[in-house]
Length: 231
Length: 167
Image (tube, rainbow over all chains, first blue to last red; front, side, top):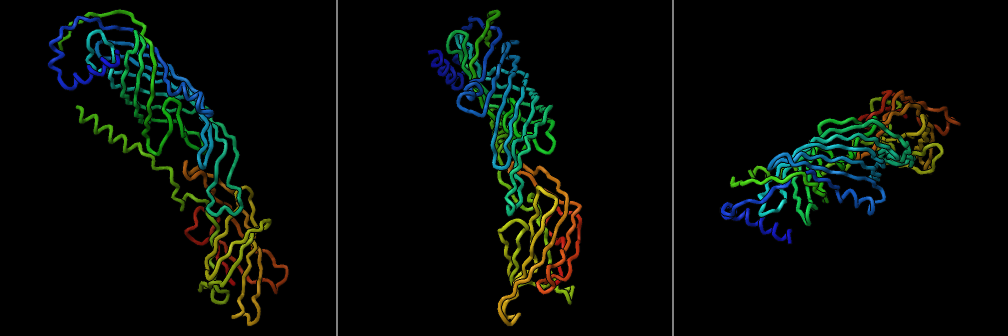
């Protein structure tokens, strides 16, 4: 039912904003700490044998529209590509801000937000096998088994987040987000390269990556503010 | 403002496209030894062979070249030495009788150095301290190569010849 109202309110805010201004707003706005987890990473533990990982997310409402947000977690991922097989293992931390652009109706507490994060990963990468590109393949000895582990790797990146969070029952939120990452700096393994970063995801040819997530989170309310905001 | 976000999204989407999953070959491949074959009596003249067979020592696969003065030999990447047998087929039009096969062995000694190229291409090996030796033939009747000369001690690509062979 709340989702239904939320959807309707969405449509209305986009179609007519004059209508909303006529309604007197004397409902409280809830301030507190929201703690959650990413459902994509959590479920991947079950359906992907080559993956273990977890992410805890938290955001704290700073004022009417801004939330201080952070994510932290670990990932361990084995990947078999055409030329290389490798395992990336490590932890990550992302800190930043979310700005809510959604004008809530009544006592609803939903978010349509745009956020920014600074992300850091500390990880290791183990090169299990690689293939030497010989062209001819005459000697049939292209596949090598080095089992080479590179420790102390890291990456720094900026993240742009677009998402929604909907309160499905009291204080419990379901969320959806899309992320775009821009890599700033990294420490590469010797004789190989970082192909995956915990918290960032797969590395493609450029310094830009993308991802998405579904989240579930719980809001611990600290205080309620009554504001008469007619903007 | 909405237009700004939207165009930003599209630009990021285009930049994020995967373009590195195809290996283009060429410079990213481990180079072969390139041999140009010249006339032993007129060393300025490239001399094509009607048919040449190449077999590495300890292996049975044969690489054939026909009507060319330019042949390429791969090197083993897990050892520092590869020996190739070069078999020249002399057709009846020249020998006047049956096809005659003559054989010489060349031993290549080198050090290897591996490079990571990319996710799509994998690794590449370059060879340095490279040296080629024409081994003394078992009998001079079977021999066809008069001489070889090394042009380089490093093999990093197969754009140009590394060895001149005279016969």
